[in-house]
Length: 277
Image (cartoon, rainbow, N blue to C red):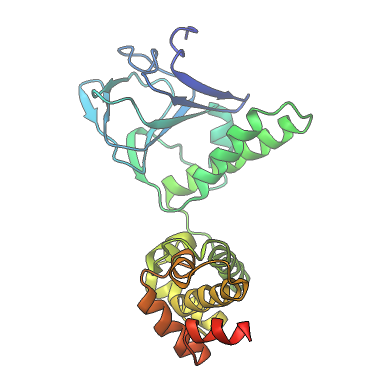
């Protein structure tokens, strides 16, 4: 691989795992016909514009799918007219297979396997890996090694459809994370689907877990946090009622007024006038 091949590629390199992301153009090596890699390769697609050929077979990953390839398999990429949008992870062969041994003794023959990503763990780990790779602090190498191990195990768990045991304390932690998210992002557009996806649960299962823990539904809790913050803003008397409604995530002033009266027994306007006294 030459420097020219990687002219349009951001590279984050470590001994056991490396990440390459095309930026505004193709990786020169990726489009070289019949090339191969000595490492396991996992490409996370962010759109559906890239096609990979293995021999004469074409594979077109969709957004949020992982294209998986074992070492030393000839392949090449064909790109559409748009710039490529994907991240490719290379994992050293022995390192990957040592991790795989925890899950199964049989090797994985990955000949263009496509696997759907079902949670946000991999994205978070990759972001951490790339951020650390840019550092110069003495802690860089041990953190990269640790993160490379976590990425490798997350990929294997995704491919093998490993289902970790779910304990009650992990459910509590998940609810705490959702509560934190609501309290920070209450002004944003948040739906039940938004919250359940962050929890990596179906909407019904998430709603049950949240209600069991908080004795209130997720959307009722969201509304209560929006109203509490709106009340604080109304006390400051620096913004109009309409502006506060929008900042707190209410789509209309009338719905905000209706909700405020249901919870606090008076309209926002009456509350502001009473606070002035």
